[in-house]
Length: 71
Length: 136
Image 1 (cartoon, chains in turn red, brown):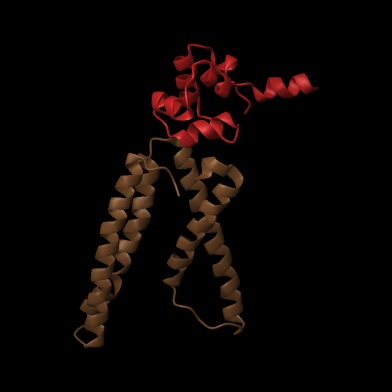
Image 2 (cartoon, rainbow over the protein chains, first blue to last red; image 1 turned 90 degrees about the vertical axis):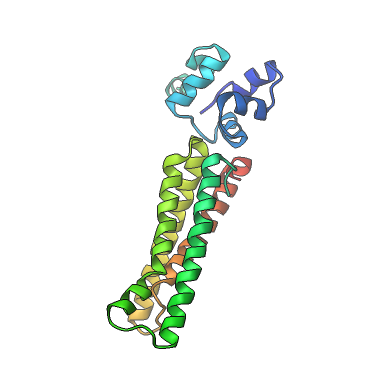
């Protein structure tokens, strides 16, 4: 799933490890989510959203909206 | 291979102790049978004892999956277990038919565990190849 995690992290000058510690997950998790290789669960997505103080949909791109745009 | 989380350290601790227990039970059983010290029900108990810590390791993997708090790391392990199970079942099925038609020799059943552990390694490699940095 596409997301703006890398951008949001870069804006705050956080490393992947910094973000991982704030979310209480491994650095590998942050890397996998950022690169779209792993879709976080809803609770983890909410934690990400709360950390950046943004709605989930401003961080993660809805796959259905993305495909409807493509159509 | 997965990240060194608290659950992973607990899992390793359990596996080390269970492995030691396995070695003790196996050495005891081999010694007992070699010197003909075991017969009747005691022989059955001694023969089964080395299997129990191995079953315990399967339980430790199950506990790890329950206790792992990092959902992505847990997913990696689940993928490894699925790879290991698929690989082992496939190999056992193929070998079973080859054995049935007398094309290969018979293998003791406990080797299935060794194959399964090898399958975990294949699963780790699959994680590495498909998920890159995130897989290791």
